[in-house]
Image 1 (cartoon, helix red, strand yellow):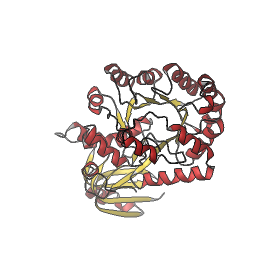
Image 2 (cartoon, helix red, strand yellow):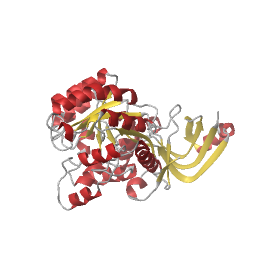
Image 3 (cartoon, helix red, strand yellow):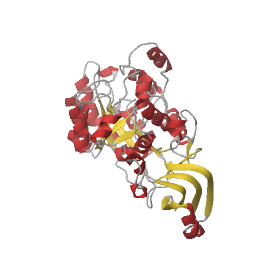
Image 4 (tube, one colour):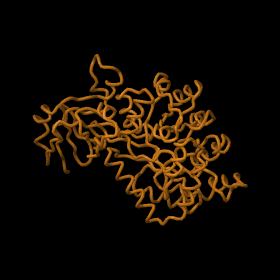
Length: 393
């Protein structure tokens, strides 16, 4: 069993509150900071964490290798719990038009669907591999990947097969949009999604998702798709309340979804439903940045006791970024989260949105998914926006 002793860590974010200290603000205490730290990794898992001086006395001699990070900060690898990276084509012109004043309505999904259907498996796989590698270079160690740009039985299934080659967190999103060939028969498309398409896709997915919003799928249809997916053994998650107030968040609570994603337009009843049903609110600030839309009110959610996650929403139309550090900086600047809250939400929060206890935290038994910063503290993620500080170790 290979083991490595990692030392020279100026500041270690464990997300283990047992390391919190009296007198710290709650958002900082929850990060479980260890100053002057070291980590012992054995067989891909965390075997020990603590002060480097203690590690040097008790565990360093058991390691096969020693790595000195020279005063850098370390935190759990980012958990990007919402992405759409199986696609082909480019929508830069749409982005430019939006910056010139055209509003975002999600109709551009059809452009990506056409390009994705026309792409070869090899081309789609190369795109996913490149984007996942780009994520890793910025500190992301776990990514969820959705289908949703094929919208035929064959194209949805192959999208998930390709996604599954890069992550275990795959999501069936056949209910992303109604494709052109079903424009006059949306009910027929729902029958396809809940029948042959689901049967072909379920073996390659862990989750089922629906875009429940204005101009997408209504409450009745969303419920039907989620229930069918759950009957096929998939766990639910949901695109909810991005483009306006609607039933999405309430449905997420009703079916016990792991997360409701976007959550841009929320009523007090929506926030209470998220809290009471313990549904994670996954906020995607890059989408607001790229669509010139209002940002979610993170402070209302946090004040109510809702668990908040941050993710990129990486997709070609409304949030073409792979950078979790960028999303952290947006969360701090535009959604008024503290740096500690944003970092926790991008790591442990994302893990909660995927119902995972083995990632997003650095304690014995957890996966040794580490992000190293070329900086002495996690604060630099928001303090130095746009600077490539983070990388996965």
